[in-house]
Image (cartoon, rainbow, N blue to C red; front, side, top):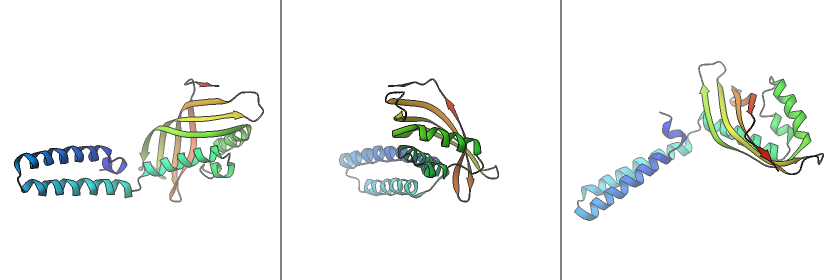
Length: 178
């Protein structure tokens, strides 16, 4: 039952529509029993929204890791970014260590996130697919300001009560330009 712990928006919209219908019926019929229904729907809808906001799911935790990575990239914070990558992922760590000092990023963000978690693995693993976007330039001045967009697939694993990135694939060809 994680469908409402990830995003309660559909329940909220349905709740508002049902409340509007019940309120309209109350105005038309003046039946006191409809007041109980209005209160009941409000309580159930509010409870579901509260649960969604206060439930820390794997998807939300992975989202925070990716958002923290984007902030670290924006700040050119190498230690902060490396802290989000598994110490065992030497290939990813060396690639990040080689690329980040070469660029100056002003803005980086993640959109269109889709996460698949596999809790049956030991340790649990996840795959996050998203569009990564960045605005910046290379530090050597060879290229003018660039807006870069690519589709990424990041593999993560759960270690010491947190998600760490292991590896990534980039699907180029979505365009970058000055």
